[in-house]
Image (cartoon, rainbow, N blue to C red):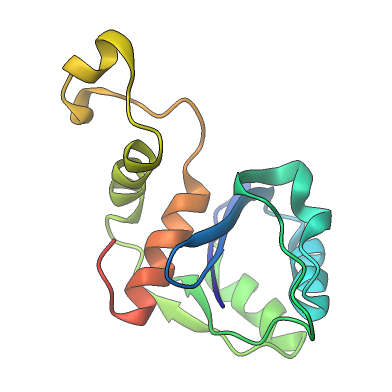
Length: 146
């Protein structure tokens, strides 16, 4: 199972998955310690208050997948913190990841009622999509399309 982070000034998106998105969260930017501990133990339940998609998994034997970090704001500091904790990270280009994350949101949560008549480009997700931007980065890091 692989993971990805979309760092920012005030918050960071996190996504975890294999073929499909398993779990995602949007955490405050200063909670990289909580994320580092979850990665180290494989127990993502402490991230439950920040969950956006899926249920936080508990991975037997800890987490051992690839970790991708978006190359935008705050990426160097986050990458350094994760590598300092013993994780190997790879920077991934963030260009257009938020735009693609909006499309992912509407694939996961199709508009209902009269909103389904509007073009998706006119709709705004009702929540931050930093976690889905992280999912886009994970797919990009693997060489897959979002």
